[in-house]
Amino acid sequence: MLCVHISLLLTLSGAAMCSLLDKQTDFGLKVFSQLARDSVDQNVALSPYGVSSVLAMAQLGASGNTRRALTAAMGFSLHERGMSRQQRLLQRDLSSEDGVETASGVMVERKMSLEKGYRRALAKAFQTHPNQVDFTKPDQAVSIINSWVSDHTAGAIPEFFASGSLTDETRLVILNALHFQGLWKVPFDPKMTQERMFHCANGSKVPVHMMRLANRYNYGEFVTANGVDYDVIEVPYKGDSLSMLLVSPFEPEVQLSTLSSDLSSQRIKQWRTELRNVKRQLAMPRFILNSEVNLKTALLNMGLGDMFNLATADFTRITTDERLCVSKVLQRVKIEVNEQGTKGAAATVAVMFSRMAVEEITLDRPFLFLIQHKQTGAVLFMGHFNQPQ
Image (cartoon, one colour):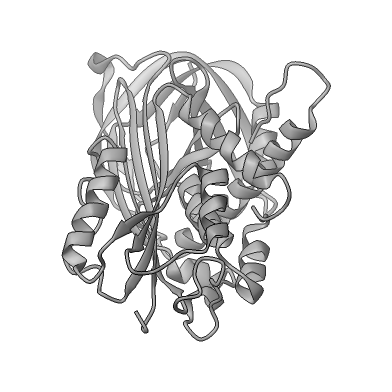
């Protein structure tokens, strides 16, 4: 994660934003690492930014032990002075970027009253206002939420919830949507795309369409704390403000979780400091990756069991009408990479309920990818590509 500044004098607000982004990114990377442990041979993708945003909105409504647990697990609190403003500025900077659209939303049961403080906090940090929904008609509510997600992902995720996914016990749904479309700074020539074998994580081999491009890239070789050698190559998008970082171990038998567990905002900063511009021929697969993940187990493993338990969850800053707890945190991601560029879409949802209601670098083996907004350092998408679909 890189905080870009023109002079050597870093303003206090800029430092705060960088610190907030570092902590949000670190939290998202930890969630991804948890997911990766349970998906050794499978493809998995996540929007770290989306997870951090949704849980930050939940954090704004938390109190007592639930608030303390969320703050400890996430490493930051939007309740701290100035943090809500930094969150708003971050969203503004991302949304002003060509090709990037992000939106946050809250759907609330129409008969449940929200605390005024929570409404103000949502408006201040995320520039969003709750929308009333009749959850006594669950399928109608599903349709409304699906339309919201589709509208804010340019139709890439047209149906987030299936019919029957919500019940009349649902009281609140917190939403984040992210859409990205970027053209490569130097596109791959489709005529150079050839069918080659990809060595999957499970030991099998499958044919893929491998794109090839000889160009100058920012490239570096690194070693994890456990002595695993890997390389990083940066593929820039048009405009140079966004890029894809491709990370691959030298030894094909090394599991990608070994690399993702070593990731942090500081590690990504190290990459960007040490990458050198060199001539390389890059060969990477053209791919489409669809991922649907339930983040509950990962969040439980990170010490957030309290918010999933109706007896212990404390979201009284949201409402005092009923006791609320989180029932599930879900995310859907779609990534498409081809010769022209990348399309990415992610939707993240937290559902609350109440029971009361020249040298060639060939990526022909599993690799990790991250799409980063370089100015803010926000990691918009990341994933393990273990096998072609």
